[in-house]
Image (tube, rainbow, N blue to C red; front, side, top):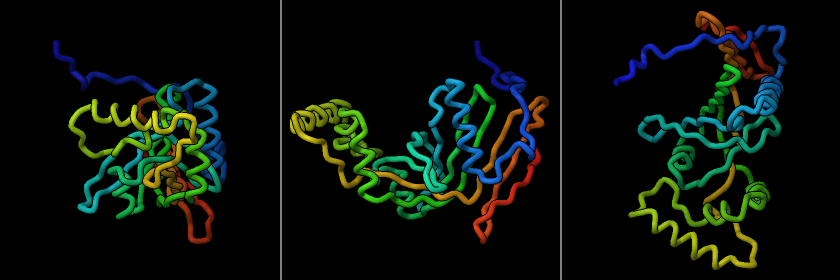
Length: 214
């Protein structure tokens, strides 16, 4: 039986968001919401949908994991030669969207991405599980491969090569730090009258806060 997806809906009743409850700094507000997502045992609380744009102006999105919040920046790691890496090399503007279904919340970020230092990438790479480090070395991320066996064979060969040795970070793998200039907080409400607040960075590095219509 065919499902009528137009009939799939539910009300949002978890709570509201008031201007007086917001931190003046959006990064502090984000940390608060992220901590609440973690303490509420939300599935994959650091998962974030990132949007980039090709040289032809075509958008592309995919999920990665947020790995650090530091100095007003959002940090994630990836293969620099992946599709997103090639997009960011051409156009550093990026969007990030966090969605926490269980809390009926979203956070949307717009900003500019820049590579973190090789030293920072090295430090994070060393914290990754051994197999993840090997995988980063052998995967030509986003590029076609003839079959899964090819990548599995490369993984096994690289694993043997690094027995008893420190797995080195490949030069085409590392972090991006996103400096935001717009951050929107969305809280679901009944009757689709959702609460939305937009922080916008000003020239003097202060933030304005506006309520948006749902």
